Structure formats: structure tokens, C-alpha cells
Length: 135
Image (cartoon, rainbow, N blue to C red):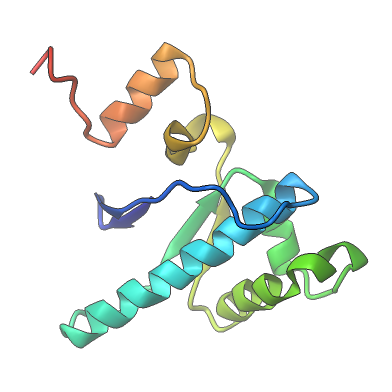
């Protein structure tokens, strides 16, 4: 989910093109894909003369956050090294903030995970999706 202020403006849910060896790798690939989308949106906003801001990506995978902030290369990262450098460079140049958000607050899970009815309803409301029977 990509927000402009408090308004969702883009969202995507799809299978990744490669098989990841860990949940951290899968999440990191998603972060890189989100960063690419954010850069495109920032270029669009720049063209229409809106002031640039530093976007924030929120992830529920603490391993991905720690990996992004650690400049040491690990043998386990060789399968997604390009994504690793892409995200790390953006962080180092202060073009991106990366925050850990506990899974209980990860609204984007509504698109990818089975949720309890209570959690689904809460996340739907946060996305401003209304039940057509009640409104």
C-alpha cells in the first residue's frame, strides 16, 4: 500500500517471480519493489511541482529492517544482492525510511493473509473500505 498523506493511492498484491529462501528475503524483495514504485511516484510529483518528501516503508519483518541497516554483506544475501544494494543506497542517501511495524498493525496483510473477522474488519475500516450492506 502506498499512501499520499493519509490517502491510499496505490496497492498491489502478487506472487513474487522467484522462490525466496527465507521470509526475510521475500520481504526484502517486496521492500525493493515498493521502493521502485515510490521512486516513480516521487518523479511524477516532482514533475507537477509538488515538494519532495522522504517516504517511509513499514514492514513486519524485523530481519529485513536489520539487514537493510547493516552494511556487512552475508553469504545468504547473494541471491538478492541487487535488491539489497538498491534499498541500502536509498537508506544511506536518506531517500527512504524503513520502519518495523508489528504484524498486528500491518494493514497490508489484508491483501495477502487469512485474517480473523475482527482483524479484517479493523483493517478494512483503516483503509476506509465500507460494507455496502451497512452504508
